[in-house]
Image (cartoon, rainbow, N blue to C red; front, side, top):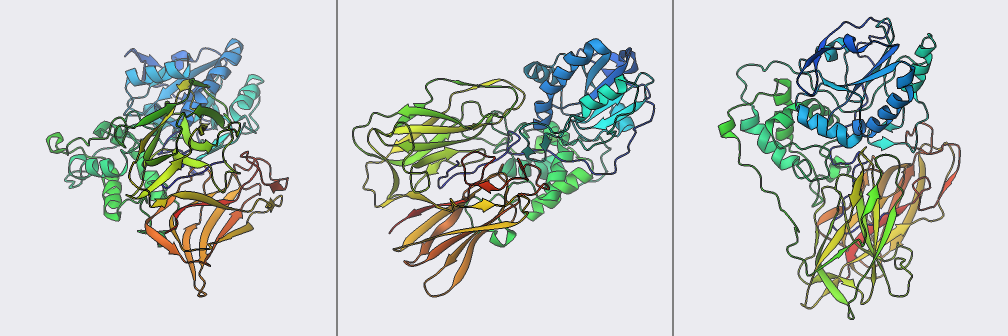
Length: 581
C-alpha cells in the first residue's frame, strides 16, 4: 500500500526521474541475414581492435550498452550470466558503447559495478552503429560463424517503457543462441529492443541562434537538473554540455511524446496545481530546435552560472532525526517486495511537526519511502487500516519536503513507532540503504491539524479480460473542510482516475482528471490554494482498470482481480490531505 502527504510525488520504475526507455519503431533497417563487415573499435585501454578479430568461434553476440541507462543496467547481469553459460560452447560476447558522452573511465566503472567481465568496446565514430542501424543501448545481435546476422532485438521481454514484469515470458536472445548453435534459423529473428536511444553524431548547422550557452543550459537547469544531477535519483546527470549533447536523442524523443517533464494530469488542469511539472512551450521548441540543428555549443564563456542546489536537509537543521537501525542490502537484480522497518520514538508528550523530510540512503535504488505512525502497543502496525489515518510523510524522486503553513502542523503521538515502508527498484548494482526522516517541531499554537484520508472501494472486482472496468467510491463531508491535495492510487491494472465534487447546491466539478494512470509514476496533486468543500459535499472517485492481455504489466489477465496490498492484486484509494477550519 502506498500513502501520501501534501508534498508527495511517486515516480519512476526505471530507477530515476527521467526513465529513458523507448520501444524502437517498427521499421529500422533490418540487417538480419546480411553479412557483417569489419570495423575498427577501441578498447577501454585506448587500443584499436578489429571487431571480427574477436569472432573466432561459433557465435558472436554484440550487445549495446550505455552508462546510466536504467534498462541497460538491469540487463547487464543477465548478459553476464549468458556469457558464462554459453562461453564454453563457442559463444563470445562483446559489449558496444556508442554514446558520445561516455568516457572510457566511466564505462569501466559502470561495468565493474554491474559485474560485467566480457569485453566492452567503444564505437567512437559510430561506424558499427551505422552499419547495424543500432537504435538503443539494450539491442543485441547474434552473428553466426559465417559472419551473418541471425537475430537482432531485445534480450527478452521483461522490460518495456516505464514497466517491468516479474520475470520474462520470452527469452529471445537465449533461444536465438540455442537455434544458431544447432545450425538452424531462430524462430524469432527480429524484436524491438526497449532502451535508451543512442545519439547519432551529426554536423552542426551553421549560423544557429539557439546554442547550449544562449538557451539550452538555462532550460536544462530549470527543468531537468532537480533530479538529473550527481547524487540524485535520475540515472544520469545533465549538468554539462557533453551530457546534454550525449543524451539529446532521448531528450528529443521524450519531449515529443510528452513523457518529460513527467506530469499525468489532463492539460485542462494546467496552472491548477502547485507542483505541476510543465516545460514552457517556448523552452520546449528551443530545446527541440537545438537538437535538430546538431546541438551547437556556443561560447562556453557565456554559459549561465552553475545552479546551486541545496545540500543536506532542505528543511534546515532538524530537531530530531530518525534512521533505519540497520542498512538493508539491495540485490543487483530481481523484484524486491515492499520492505518495512520499525523505529521507536521516545517522546512522552505529543509533538507537533511543522516541517519534515525523508531522505533515501541509496537514492539510485529507492523508488519511494512512506513513513507511517503506529501507536504504542499496536505491534509495529500503522494506525487504523491505512485509509483513515496512520500516514506521516514520504519521499520520492523530485519531491519537496513537507513544510506546513503557519498555524498548521501534523501530530506525532507520544511514544509512537515510525514504520518505514520502502520500495526498492534494482538497477543491476548491489546497494546498501539506510534511510532517515528529519523533523522540525513547533512550539507555536496549532490552529489547524493537517490530516490525511482515503476514499476506497475495498469490495472491487475487476473481471478477467476487461479493458476498461469502472469502479467508484465516495465520501461526504459532514462539515466545512479545506481540501489541500489529492492522490489517486491503484496498481498495475490502473488505467484512469477522476476526483469529482458534488456540491449541496447541485453543482458538479471535476477537481482532478488523470487520463493515463501510471503505477510507476504516481504523485500527489497539490492545490495552489485550499479548496473549500462545504458541509454536505460528496467527493467521488471514478477509476478505470485494464485487466486485458493488452496491458503489458498485467500479471494475469485470465483471473478476476480483487482488493489486496500486493501489486498483483488491486486497490482503489483516492487519498486527500485536508484541514477543518
